[in-house]
Image 1: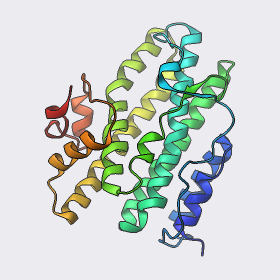
Image 2: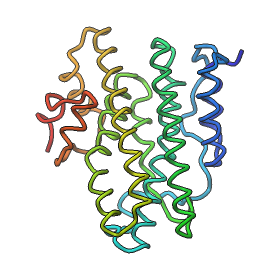
Image 3: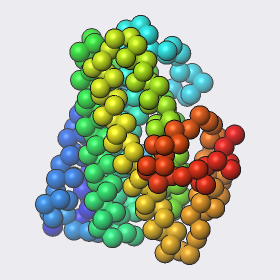
Length: 263
């Protein structure tokens, strides 16, 4: 029987976006069908395999996208979101392959499900780009999205604090306004896709807060204080309002976590 770690590593080392998407879905199916042993017994790559396109640029080199009112602006925004979802596949799979052995099977259930969601989100966004005459890889993309994984390879608690509880939680803050931009432009198809992604993001952040709390309990740590310490030491950005307090609350990420350290 193939191990969970071996299967996760295979997904991470798949460069083609559509092959990676399919591999992530196959990983989820194999786990749910009990065809993978719950062993994380191989080393995860420091950097996943990615395609030659899109060209990856530093944040300060990224072209301005505008507000998404024009079709060109909407394509640029959809492309940026597709890249986020593409990298999110690897973030979720790496979570499983790197840390899954430290947790009960329910942890793997949750993060395998997140990986499958991200694969589906990427497919929806790329399909929409193609309907608008573009495709994933046609524009440059942000080079720094994997950084959160690189600085948290040593500790599952840090990974949970930064990836779902900071980065995905930020998606909860900005997605409603992005949906409104597409609706204002009359692009109801793109708005509906983002609405679907938004609902799933709440569940992803919830998985992060749930397992962060579980691991804090195992280590005898107070969750909110521990999260604040990890964000200060591991996250190179800042937490900026406005926050979507209601969605964050639904995901278990209450104001006691982030209000005291928000800039």
